[in-house]
Length: 326
Image 1 (tube, rainbow, N blue to C red):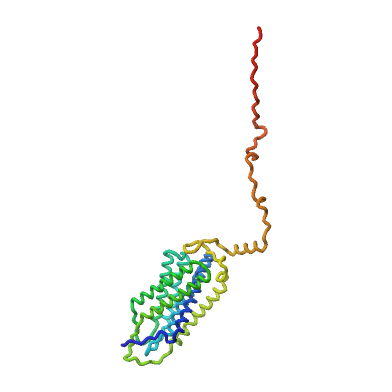
Image 2 (spheres, helix red, strand yellow):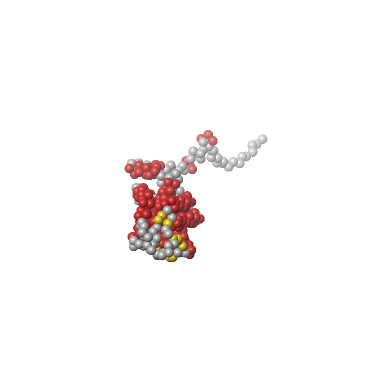
């Protein structure tokens, strides 16, 4: 057994840049759907959260295997076990979904944010190392424990920050900025994990063996997630609140981490549009407010005619009468 020579950038900067773009795309769609879920009625929330979970999971999975297209080992052709590779995609979507649903229903603050971010970050790390386990070649991988731990911490911190940004509901540009940071963190987690890797080959020498390129092996498996990300992008693009004005961005209910504002429903928008199109003639304010009754003129305070008190007559002093003669 001898050490193999690893090249993680056999296509130069093409694979890192494309991988970063895929991570940003999945993160942007997922965060936008999560933000949208916080603004809709309770019945529509699971659908938006599920779409966001699938978008983030597909984005980080695609990012990982696009980056792996540039990964080669001299003298050892690499093959990928399809069941294990697709299992890593399912694990990513499910674990990311658990974290997103926690934040979507409990709010992006406190223990809910910490729990959701931890589970989502562990999902990202699990996807990475499970995908690495699906690689087959004439040798074995060895990982540095400290570097692997650092990659897991990066994934958890990145996921927590992304979910916090999704709960702030600050508009389209805010989500784009958060997705750029999330893509950078996911890519950093991937290459940090790859830096912890060392390869040991089973062959007696380093003689090169011909085989298919990683790009030819991975390209067919990436078609499905890429098509899904395109479909999710179309849904987000044509949703009216995705690119609408800030006035339409109001949360459906009050929860920690979401600003409390007035619920704007479809009926509210329709009523406002009707009032703007056909303004009614408002009555004069003086005609609307009833005139307060003065206490002196109130029916209860006015005395009834038959029970009215008469003013006491003035008594004149009695004159002194002289007694009569008998």
